[in-house]
Figure 1 (cartoon, rainbow, N blue to C red):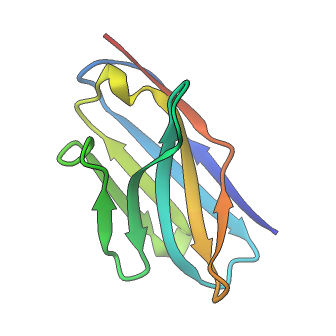
Figure 2: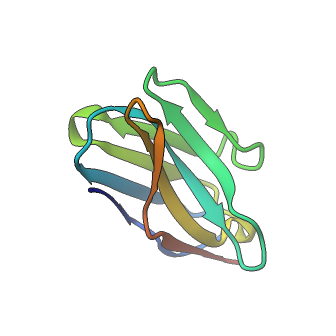
Amino acid sequence: QVQLVESGGGLVQAGGSLRLSCVASGNIFRINAMGWYRQAPGKQRELVAGITRSDITNYADSVKGRFTISRDNAENTVYLQMNSLKPEDTAVYYCNANLGYMKLDYWGKGTLVTVSS
């Protein structure tokens, strides 16, 4: 069993910052990549940022320059530092981990980020 637990969401004013954390636990043999996705009401889930086993990162165009993804390998934790938040960043943010040689995807339950104008 693998569990991903997100934390750090909340309510923030536009222009503010939040830091999301996601801890992976359980039967973790190999982490290929971890990432953050988000889903706003009435919209599809979208990739926000990802980081590979080789620390290669990628970002959605809408968050480039404002969000930074990082990870702590020893703690099986991935972070998302979100700066200069905008109301359109409001969404449920989900942690994703791609694990093992079978490259299976696991998901957290999500954490709500609300940015007020």
